[in-house]
Length: 289
Image (cartoon, rainbow, N blue to C red; front, side):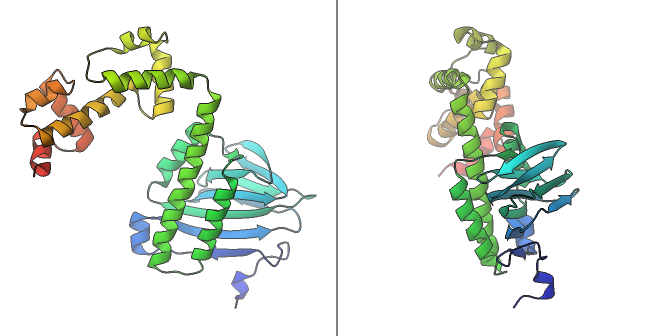
């Protein structure tokens, strides 16, 4: 039975529901966790406005229309649209008067929420139309039903679902961007060449000349599509190669460095520590049978 605090205002249809959660200590330390999730259907226009709220909000517009104001910009919204925002920034969302909307939403926080959101905003505006709308809807509905309980299992499953939701969003926007950007073909060619030649010695200047693209555009676009600069990408490939040699060969550390494309042993040691947090020698000791 709902208490008076569970009742929503008369502007909401009776089917509207909201669940507020308080995370346990483990969830707060280690998981993504639900702060609030719900479904609403409005009878008339309504505005919700907040700022300085430590939360991330994902909203799906199931029907109707309205607007989002975030970071000083207004975005019109209708059925099939979503918005994803950082609630520490001032925002409001408002349903239209002539076509009040129906929403499904979750406020969440924890774990690497800020990093996920930062990656999302590098590739997308806060309001968008996802092809995976139905998949997002299913997971938000599952999340809502799950949080009718308050226990460790619900917190673990909620964290899993939030990761799935965030992954769907990032995969969608990055794949869509790749399909729409003609430079993506060039970057695939560059990455394929690096995958084959990463053990060789070459410079960014030589790479730009080979693929007829300026150093500036090569670095910027490669990082956009692959998540790191060409240099960091190659270093990562070399570190992975070195780890195999450290584990499965009897090469000296100097030989491992040379065979992995690092022509300076001290530079190899520095880059290995940066990537793994330990020295190559310590890595070998920890991972050898």
